[in-house]
Structure formats: C-alpha cells, structure tokens
Length: 210
Image (cartoon, rainbow, N blue to C red; front, side, top):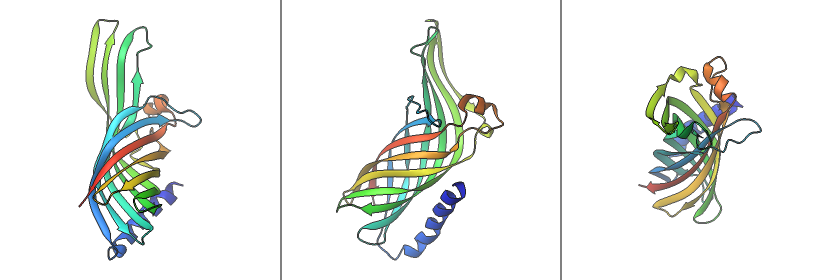
C-alpha cells in the first residue's frame, strides 16, 4: 500500500507537466484542520483545531475531469483535555507539522460541483506540545515544548476525498484525509503513548484562483 500510494503520487506529478497544454488554473488555498490520531477500531474524539495553507494547480483533462496537485503546510495532531481530572483543568495540544503533497483526481458532477479523491504524501517538519492548564487550582502551566522529530516516522501517506464548489475565481469545500502509516516509531518512547495511531484530518478550505 505504501509503495502504491507514493508511486501513484509521483506518477501523477510526472504526468502533470505533459498535460500543461490543457487548460490549467493555479491558485492559493487554506483553511481549518480538525485533526485527531486514530487507532484501529477506536476513533479518538479529541479533535484539535489547526490550519493548512499552500498552493494548487488544477489541470483540466476534459470538461468533466481534472488532476489537481497541491503543496500545503498542515498542522495535525490531537488535543488532550483535563476537564474531568481531579488534579488539573485545561488542555495539551499535540502538534504535528507537515508538508503535504496531495494529488487529487477531480470529477465534475455539475458545472460548479466536484468530487475529489486521491493519494497524499507528507513530510514531518516538526512536533511540539502546547499546554495550557491549571494544576490543583493553584499552579498555572502555559508552555510550548519541542519534541525530537526522531521519535516519529518522518514520512506519512494516505488517502484524501472530499467535495468542492468551483465558482471560477473562488473555490470552497471540505476534505477528509486518512493516514495509513502510524505516526510513532516502533522502537521509540512515542510508541508507548500512541501505539499504532494514524493521522485523521477533516479540512474545510477556501481557495483563490489566479
């Protein structure tokens, strides 16, 4: 599966320049991430708010089909709440900061409504913990600490699918990205905390076409 996703992503990128003679639209996009880390058979409900931003190039192959590679900076991870704890009140955000390279196949369902699906590959840039909590109703913790990137798999890959509305100069929509590679390395302490957890991200976006 890993080789298939990475291979298909690279193939689409290699084919794209050959299609530039077709109608092409370039723009910027960005929006909100609602992310979590999921394990097999257990959906984590601690959604964390983040964002993504970058550029895209939509290459029309026909009136009903296009290829859309993107390059995005995306903050993923999860949030831990302490509201139900007897000792602490607050939260810790576990941030995983990636460079995402999705390549989407775009199917036009109508003149301005489209379905997108395709693989993505991500590179982990950094990781950190952002804590804002009060302990024993007295001690206030407000800190942001970097985590050694070596504790995690640098490469992530998975599938993305979503719906969008294309209003020519403005695009809006949402995607769901499901990671297929575990975040933590097997032989690191991070695995004791996260196990085989994988990235799960809901994205809501807006884009401007140049």
